Amino acid sequence: APRPADGCPALLGKVHSIDVQQILRRMEDADIVCVLPLGANASGGDVRCVASDELAVQVATALGAAKLVFFTRGQRIVDARQGVPVPTLQVKDVRAIIKYAKETECFTGDSL
Image (cartoon, rainbow, N blue to C red):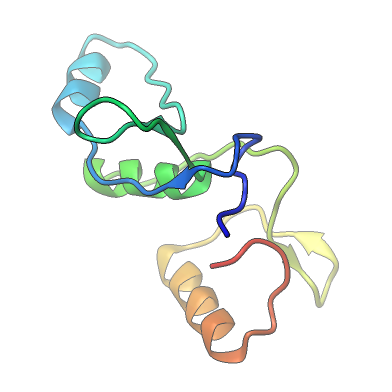
């Protein structure tokens, strides 16, 4: 069963497309672009929530961003060896963590 994302009902959807040109136009106008974790199917109905972390990654990837700044409500990656939050990660390190998590199934919390 789908799990709620960001307080939305259990209608969890996936990112299918991103209007990169619209975002770039807004950025060229010096606008701050906020992307809500909501989407609809092609006919405009069936509104779904999208996991905000997944949406952030998809938008950053589509834009070819060099850096992603993501604000969350307290969820974080913690270095269990030292018991401290990890403030930054390189893309290669994130990929290694995801690979390790999938292979060992030892991580708790949100699914990968």
